[in-house]
Amino acid sequence: MNASFTITPVEKNIMRCQHTAAFQPGDVQALANFLNNYRGKLLIDLTGTTGDECSQNIKMFRPMMPVSAIFGSEIDASILDIPGSYYAHPVKYFKTEEEALHWLHDQ
Image (cartoon, rainbow, N blue to C red; front, side, top):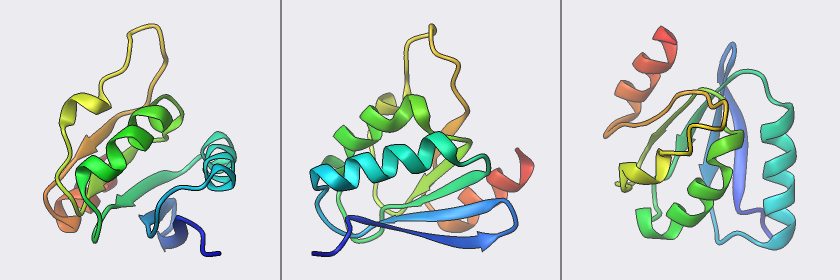
């Protein structure tokens, strides 16, 4: 069985997380562990998926996300909002990978 995501380096301090298939229970735990331990920035690539397909997972993982830029499939930006009681890193949606990387460099 293939994992539902891949993690690959983009450049120093930036990793790409690419959605590749439907999430399985083990994948959810693996991604949660990665997010809890990772201290860099994340480029989230939803290319080849739909925003609806990813929305529930993004909303679930949002409080754990490091500074992250999302691109590749249009999502409802409201899923990035979380209650003020959480300490959260900035997470933004961009139309292109170039815009997302530019923003990550400025963070």
